[in-house]
Length: 295
Ligand SMILES: [Zn+2]
Image (cartoon, rainbow, N blue to C red; front, side, top):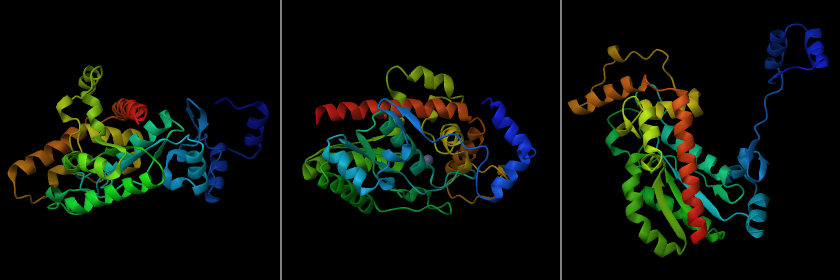
């Protein structure tokens, strides 16, 4: 941004910009003022928190329901599980929320994103430290209760947006029962289904140096690219030395894959993540739009 003369003079009169920033930082401020968080939607400029149910007030949700503006909800499901040496455990939950929020902004003000389910079905990663897992019935009961809460408030269209592989089959197997019990239009999908859609397959193929079969791949080029684009603070390569790593895994194939995921992740780039996020958000928005039309 080009500073106006008076503003530049003002800054210079206070000394160097760096000195001003350092002083402001100690006061917990950011100077020059940070860019706004506002994003442009079809309905105008919006603070992105407005599509997050847990960041909304009851007034906002009530009025959105009363006026009929709010028609649908996304329930993100993720995991808290090992993501190799370099990604935060919360990656799957964070990416499901990210895609859900971007899709909800595309459809603003019709969609709210419910509080995510941050732990999933991950028993197969328990050999690696830190992984948390729910029993299938516990996980499905939590998801059901969230959908039932949304139904009670009058939401008739619910998309469960999954970000963790282990949740996918149990969710899909349960949808018919959910629909019967809830009496609303509820569906479940994983956001990476977007990459198999007609019209984007070639783009994904060009993007993925390890091959399109590694979408959604665990902690490799795909997930690390998404993290670098959306939340780089959750990528920690510092002091990671895979060659010196002593990881005792019982299954040799499991150990080979773990190593492969790490080296694949070195091909991750934020620019790839930006494209992958855009494809998934557009696909989720389109799917939800068609669900709302049918409700
Ligand atoms: Zn993951």
